[in-house]
Image 1 (cartoon, rainbow, N blue to C red):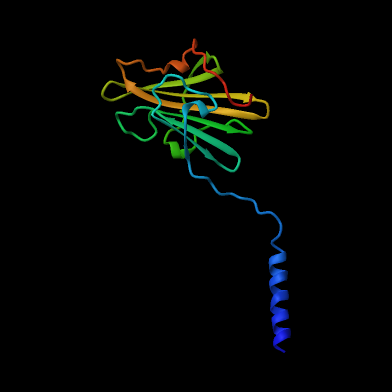
Image 2 (cartoon, rainbow, N blue to C red; image 1 turned 180 degrees about the vertical axis):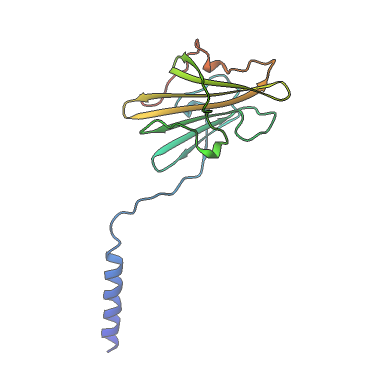
Length: 172
């Protein structure tokens, strides 16, 4: 009798565990990892990046670089790069800024078309937000920046200027 009970229990465990042999899809997010500037999809060569990070999402890879930020306001002085199968229209909310709905200035740099929004803030501060997209084979890279600086300083990082020549390293 004990042998039958043991056999029935083993059979039940086999049946229950056997149904779970199909692969499971993972929707887990990996923790961000620190990376060097040269590991960015579009390396930023201005030399004033404090730290860069990479985080793999289920269908996207996020890269972001922190720039010096004297105001310590969330979402300021950051560069966000997202590699995905489709262009991303807004930076993820965790980065604390969005591209405005108002009219933008259209520009062109070495990566291609660029949208630029500028706004003045209190205490002689000007903020620049940009968005840019580029396709490489089957993937898109979406680039977003939010840079705030003193109005007397150069408000536009040099890599956004029409004459800038960033080196592309993604999708090649």
